[in-house]
Image (cartoon, rainbow, N blue to C red; front, side, top):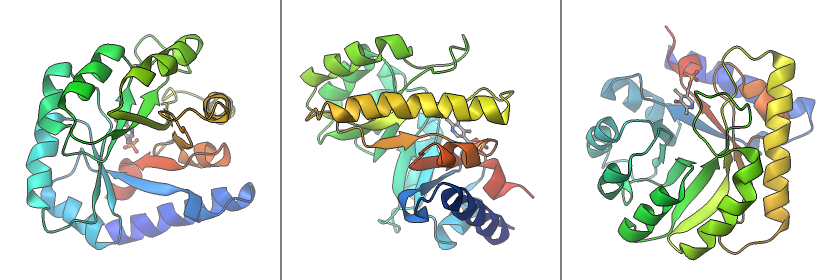
Length: 224
Ligand SMILES: *Cc1c(COP(=O)(O)O)cnc(C)c1O
């Protein structure tokens, strides 16, 4: 049941926050609805979650159409975004979690009506299979985004390898936090970079203990 799963996840968020003396109000739960149908998506909204995430442009657009009566819902796009798909969704989403190349940035610049809140995706683990900017290239990338006034870098995003141990999760998330702090400390007008999008079903407790402000949770909410 979604309401029970949601209660459990919220409890875990509380516990993880308490361990490091954070307030749970600092952590936004983003429900990843990519694997569930419209009825189940509606159930999680009705249960009180107003941040939803999808990872496919076509499925996202179909789903968003069904929820025009829910203006409070904030839509997050967490998948790889192809340049040719930017036009169709850039003015439909509230947050993009996967900005990792300047060609994509240029396309967003061309198509967006208002500045888009973006997380820059960083490949902290260095896995070949992962999207994202290498940590060593991040500062140049952030500097390159200065030219695009339709992009606001609200924070950084990463994914830990599925096989990572708890200790490795902590190490990786702490690295992203340090990178976030470095950018935030520069006080760049186009990159306030106050947020950290990290943590999924497997590792959101570790992510919160390392400072996550947005956790992206699917399986833990929608499991039977
Ligand atoms: C699917 C997905 C999630 C949610 O994963 P769960 O393990 O089901 O919680 C989070 N972030 C991204 C980028 C995803 O693709």
